[in-house]
Image (tube, rainbow, N blue to C red; front, side):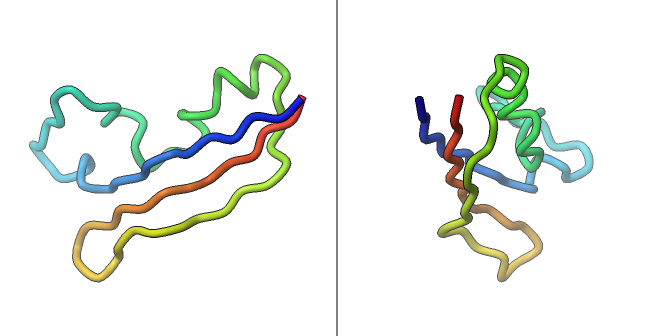
Length: 70
């Protein structure tokens, strides 16, 4: 069985004094945090690829595509 996930990563949440309301700010930038529940449930990462995003400024955003297999 396979599962395809997309994970949005954004380092803006690490700016001092910044609070991101209504988001997964505590998890952005940490792929393991986004996937932890799947990995603990026996899923394994089969493939991982990055796409899109920007790193031209002091902030960086982008997506990670993860193929999980069980």
